Image (cartoon, rainbow, N blue to C red; front, top):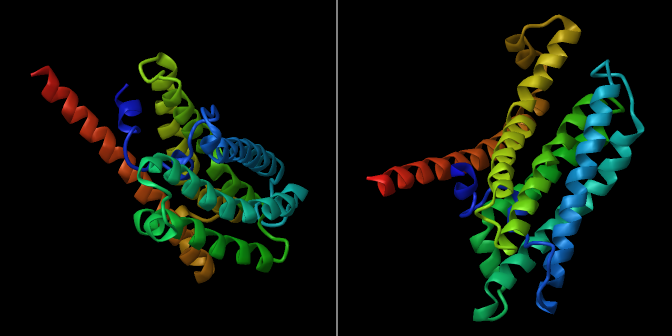
Length: 246
């Protein structure tokens, strides 16, 4: 319950800006489409990532066709999700008129940077990797595993189901999947690389090319930022709950 309540304010991830799939008027149609596409993309990316990771036993040299094929879909999706966030923000501010792009960028600057910087790092890496590391590509696809849960949360809010067990369970699963698939997965990738080459986890960091280390550091910084926000909200909810009981 605390987890779910804490997810009701601020940002919990990319898709948490997107409204639920149930439109009440024509103004919500774009938001409904965004939610549907975001959920579908999260499911497909997770399935693609799990398939690639489970089939690439050699983390550097094993190939899987989904690694290159699905990456071609992800790039335009980042642009679509920016549009989706704008539609959602405009819908929420509809009583004050159409939201300008300048206001949207000012309010959501960190999230927009996230959507611009990540493709700027990951997709050049896809082109320059010379067919190596499909295993790691699959791991990055698993980043999207939390998206369906954030979209379900919005749908439950729209249906006035915030006090249901499903809402609380979904909030907990959002935190768990975010941590496992966006935070813990990087040490897992380093561990898998070290296992193949007989290296300790600490030694892997010195063996990786500096460009890989720098890119991973930037990606991890964003993920830790969002997860820290989520934990702050959990702490706030716990504190407020204790004060209410006194």
